[in-house]
Amino acid sequence: MPENSPVIIQRIREKTNALYSEIVGIRRRIHRHPELSFREFRTTALVRDYLSRLGLKIEHDFLETGAVALLEGAKGKKDRGLVALRADIDALPLQEENSHEYCSVEKGVMHACGHDMHTAILLGTAAVLSEIKDDLAGDVLFIFQPAEEKAPGGARPLIEAGLFRRYNPSAILGLHCFPHLQAGKVAFHEGSMMAAADELYIAVHGEGGHASAPHKISDPVLAAAHIITSVQHLVSRVASPYEPAVVSISSINGGNATNIIPGKVTMSGTLRTMNEELRAQMHERLKQNIEYVGKGMGVDAELNIVNGYPVLANHPETTRAIRTASIAYLGEENVEEGEPMMTAEDFSYYLHHCPGTFIQLGSGREPPEKGDRLHSPFFNPDEKAIATGIGVMSYAAWNWLKARSTGIE
Image 1 (tube, rainbow, N blue to C red):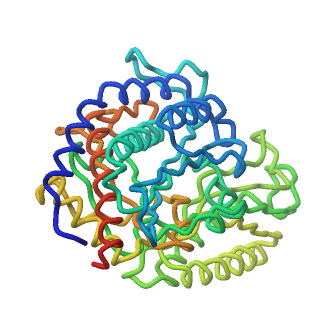
Image 2: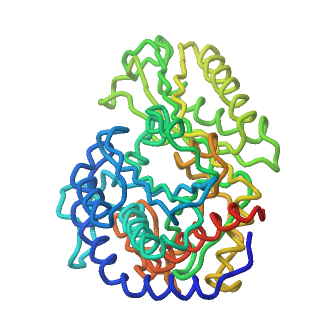
């Protein structure tokens, strides 16, 4: 990356501070009116209106919701660089239990994962970079993506609709609120940072009957219990102890009376892995294990696996470059080494097509509060993270384009 620019850093800080109250207000508007995956029509209208007022070129023909917009930097430059910045815009099917004045007014829907923060931060970044566009050594692509929370997600259909056929960014950057980090800080991790997440659906077919005579039937309830225990052992017997993997059975359904053993039990759960080779191994072994345990218990057991998001693997060189820019902007004491985690993100799809990195944005408090938990009905991120996110994304984009224009890597 090029040498740090104190002048640009100061300009970004001043413009971020001037915008802060406005962007917090936008975040709260979005929070009050959350929308589920692929139904983010109100949020899409807000985003497109704001970007239009900034004078950005907006694409309308990729997906029905979300927005893609281009900010053109300094005119007259040849071999223009392009960097992409992404935010997700959808909410979760969860009833909010907070009591602040901007709580969700949509029953059973809540921004409990910080996507309202991400959207507001990227709008603020667009505003800041629009103010300094004559100093940008290239262009910036803003991606407001729908449906991160629901497989198959919005990233893959956006790519399939032609995002990277129309645009060819040299890097893509995203961020996510992480309440285990204090607001004002960011963290980076090279390589695999978030897991592949696959959905497991198990059906156990037996022959039900009277609970007083289990010897006369084939019991799918007992078989299901053995299957649950058995699949837990696979992690320690297939995965290396140095390779993270998780199998969790999170639901079991069958029967509705104390004196009737049902003929069928269904279960569902998740598989999380950090590399694609282990993922494929676990798929094969889970299917074998469930089938054979079922046969041993006198029932038929089958597994259906729905592939979810792939492993999110940050590009090492891009991650190091953006970490360096973040240190210049925030100070070394506010940039940490991130921890890999078994949650999943469809930002991973972009990284299959373009080098990039996913930034962990601190949104927690010290000491931690009840609202410092993702996917909680009490989730309540520290809004000071908004200024941090805008500043880091703005300076990282400027710095990346400057480096590409000067040939410094």
